[in-house]
Length: 191
Image 1 (cartoon, rainbow, N blue to C red):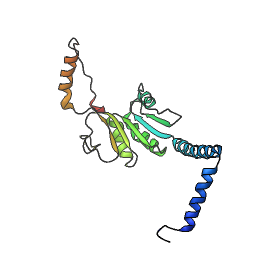
Image 2: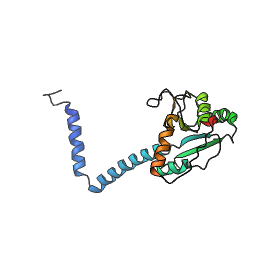
Image 3: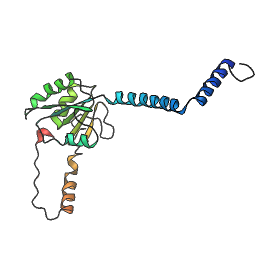
Image 4: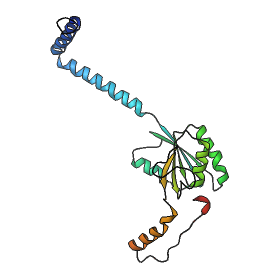
């Protein structure tokens, strides 16, 4: 350092660079700016090309609003996501094998519908994130430690607990007082 001003060679280089920029035609500066912008956009476009693979595991084939929900969020099958569907056709004993297939396909996440599918997925992997849906008591089923902090690789939606069933019925009657009778169908094998 000389006189506390840093390296004199660097100062000359910076000065020379600044004077070149100041004397450069505006078209050159515009071209350099456009090039830098194009490089930034190119890098972003390359990163956006990753297609996320979603495994979808359910006991039966459903009218699937799942894809519509993803579309609403900007995820388009074939463009930025790929969905691998596996349905057990009502044969719960097939779910473990189907979960293993999804893991073999190296999906990024597994979405499960119902307790048997979630249990099969959890038993098959501790590494791939699992998003469960339509499960009444994931804590009681051993899928998560707690609803507030699920822990592990399982998270998702719960129909909360059977303790709230009475309250749900009460709310239904308050919002729709003329509805009568009300029937509830329940399959203990799928909760």
